[in-house]
Length: 394
Picture 1 (cartoon, rainbow, N blue to C red):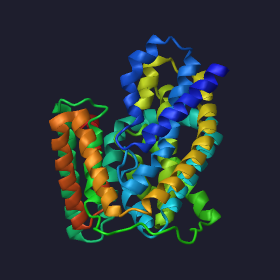
Picture 2: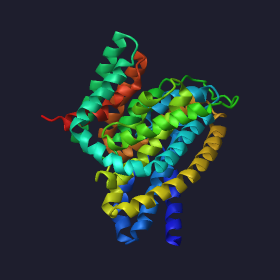
Picture 3: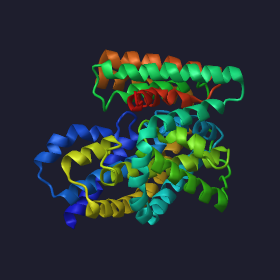
Picture 4: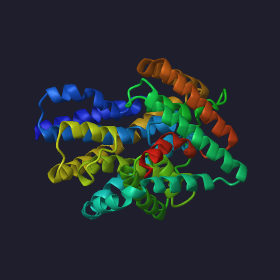
């Protein structure tokens, strides 16, 4: 029991650090597999550490994704609405809304776990031949959300340009667990930060944002459903599903829905090891190589996830408040420049000249989408188009 508690604490610490530092992602745990394997730890201790790392990181990552603009996979589209709230003096509320959605989703998913266990494997088996069609449908809905024909055409162009970039990744001599960092940071992070105006300061927190119980329930319900889909459907991340699943078309509902999708996606991607026999994330892939996941292990994962989610939500809100206290006293454009410089440095260190080329290309594409005034969700074609091609029946 003591070993498990220590493993949870270690996972919380590592997950929090990885979440706060742009560029450090829990998927990089794959690089630690040889070291962890040599320790010969009991299976439940390994599970406790990996699950605590994954869940805590997903919560804490709301801070840099929403307040600094350096997104991890799944949080890309949080940059725009969260930045608007940040510059309106409601940055803390943006993080809080995502935390509310995430914590609510964990509770709801675990409450529905018996139904999920009995239904998901069968649904997955039936839908597998139509994966490509489901992905095409999601893309079409995203494009048709644009208001004018000109924007629809531009969105389609951006989707294919991003998709071609995604297809090129397999030819890049960059570790597959690192290659998405320059790609996503360019498309959704650096490109958004480039629009920061000199002299911009983050205002002090204004009146606390109020959300109704109905908004919370609807966002958590739709977000949890979206998280289950994104946890099982390859190529589709949390952000684009949040755009589609957001029950009420406003920033508050979007951020709660995003939080719900992101957290439930993390949990379901791990549980998918037993439910459908597939790994849907780097964390799940690492766990698959270290331990055998069965029914007892899945129940244990659920219990650890609930406990860690409760602790992580408190840690995230505390750190968000402290982070904003620092950000409010600094010219935000200077913060943006510092973050861009940090992302460039991380890209060079971990992925070299090829990563720098990817970062520049994706940043240019992200700027083009921003200037064209289209939804950046279509840029997730970088992942979706290669997945569609992979699942085509011919």
